[in-house]
Amino acid sequence: MKLKNIFGSSLNLKEKLGRILGGKKSKEEIFEEVEELLILSDISAGLVNRILANARKKSPSIAAFTRDDFFTLLKDEIKAIFAAIPGADAAAVPTSDEKNVIVLVGVNGSGKTTSAAKLAHYYREKGRKVLLSAADTFRAAGSSQLSLWGERLGIPVIGGERGADPGSVVYNSLNSFTSKDHDLLIIDTAGRVQTRENLMKELEKLTKIIKKFYPDGPTETLLVIDATMGQNTLDQAKKFKEFSGISGIFLAKLDGTAKGGTVINIVDEMRIPVKFVGTGEKQDDVVPFSVDEFIDSIFSD
Ligand SMILES: Nc1nc2c(ncn2[C@@H]2O[C@H](COP(=O)(O)OP(=O)(O)OP(=O)(O)O)[C@@H](O)[C@H]2O)c(=O)[nH]1
Ligand SMILES: [Mg+2]
Image (tube, rainbow, N blue to C red; front, side):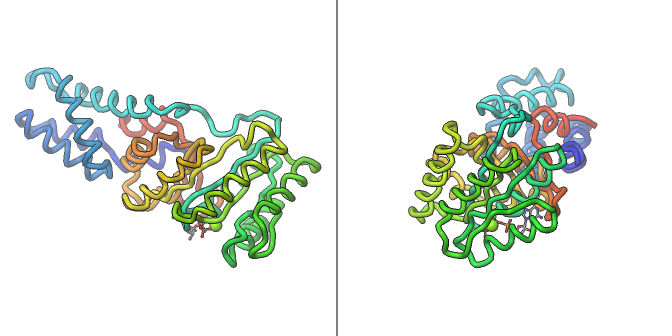
């Protein structure tokens, strides 16, 4: 699936803006209606206000105010949001032949295990030799859930018993990874909240173990965020930034939202690039995120 297909008709900003600007309206009326349109697209009120304030500053006189002018303003503002995030346009996991390690972390139920399976499938399709590591030994079904995915996809999974030390699972996984014919290790971890300090510490421990094998650490540590969640959960996700290794976001469950606006919102709040989006519960429901494609999808017909 292409990014464009996901966002294409979801915002449909051009058509709606065209309608707003089509009638004989005052600049104030136009701004009001545009404000409503953006908020309905799931962009937060704060961000919409900022976008519009900037647009106001730059906007030409009402007489010269066209749909395309507005589009350019809006596009510039959205571009600026992404441009302010380092690495926002870099692909996740460069397609080198080297051994790469991806770690998935996040709050409970955000979609880590499903996303780990999707990424394994995605990279295997690209010719990578993938190994999965089920380091969620915290929850009863944590490890078996990923093993089931592994069986279904025909991708090997290294796991451990419930209550086993996740560090030892990761250690065993890395041993298999280095000695066997694999070039991408994807590690699923237990869901955690920022208040469970031991779980956060455990995350740092996992990174340290990876660094014993690969001094540069994981190629990517992706924070899996549930796109349907409210501000409260987003605040929880923000706490993960204290764990400094996060390199990008896997935005899961985008299929359950008004889509386009959510991405802008989350990037603006989290200040971390989105690397992938999840669009459903199946293995193929994953799309690499590209800023250009995303902006195109909002602004094309
Ligand atoms: N619609 C939709 N559902 C998803 C997506 N990704 C995950 N899910 C569903 O979300 C639920 C939780 O997914 P998991 O992968 O188990 O989440 P988790 O983060 O591993 O959960 P814990 O290990 O308990 O913290 C499951 O029912 C998944 O099928 C997605 O992109 N779209
Ligand atoms: Mg899980």
